[in-house]
Length: 498
Ligand code: GLN
Image (cartoon, rainbow, N blue to C red):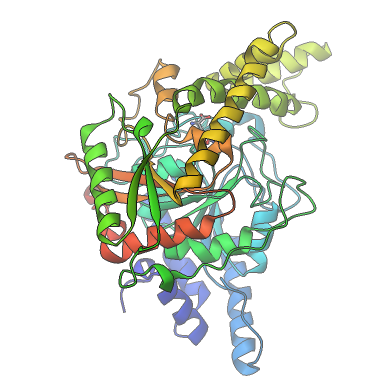
């Protein structure tokens, strides 16, 4: 048998359920690899060895009991380890959000997504690194230091869920959770060469996710392939009375056989938007994405040009709406309700010093931008206008999905950049999000997966976007591609770490 950390999810589940491997053995294998490699990669903010082993033993007991008294079904992910982005609450485990202001925050409850996964039997290895409050595209905004891209340690893994994406490709965990407000699952998936799903807004509960931009935030997931993320998605998805924005729609049947490479993609219409192949995009990114689109054509899909004319306006609209919502959401971190307090005689000084000392520069920038955009006299000019643009972007997608089933595009204009490359220039960092923000503004789902490498050996990703609540189309289409290509199986050498 191959090494435990190299097993596919299917192989792992079979071995666990057959009793050939215990969850304790699996968990220890990943914990050992984390201990060895994470000092270099820094994918984790908090590692959870003791509790993880207890959860593994619980899973092993359940498996043994069921083997003695068969008849009952084992929960779908019993004994499988997972890593959780450090913006989702896991009961009794520190949740920092990559910020000093929550350095010692220990939530007394599980986020709904986490709760459902625990009920499905997962073992939580730890909490992964993120840009502070998920604001960023590189994990460099984490107060706990950046994550390093396993393909090249001098490069960022993308962000904000960079810790989770890096952990998958470095085989520190088979599965991981992320969140996507403006691209934070898809872009790190692309930079690290893994697969990531951003579900439809409202498909997965946000209860227990520390809010950034509440009308945009969605909990997503990472794995080594589309097929491996499906069970995770199915467990997390669905209405939740604790989040009124979740929708009570059945989770679609995800039938992979319908899209396998033999039956092909004959009935699938794939739209290619001109607006996503713009000047300035790294040529290798465009080449690889176009080659992948050719591959879909070979598989039988019909390729059509579509137009999403308001794409260019997505970036300014997002960078008004997201900071506006963030400025309201982050008001609670004041040293009184949450977080450490910097003492002072006056209440206002407590607020000022606590927030001044404990928030990082990007978070402060967003709070100021958002507060300004919402202030009397400017509200209509900024926030009001941005909301109108948002409606136009949503209509763009609705019109396109009249003509095609899914839309194919690059995830980001470049591959992973150097740590520090966007240093003092927040705008150049925001431009990295140009292709991911529109799906969040429209609320539609997206999946990112690897389609090749640039000449420095850094992964290139593409994304498929689909109509609201049609995640099954994205999984099936990405799966068809992964049946005939092997980009998703490639692994970084990490020579000087091993
Ligand atoms: N990079 C974007 C931002 O900084 C998106 C982040 C996210 O999706 N959480 O807001």
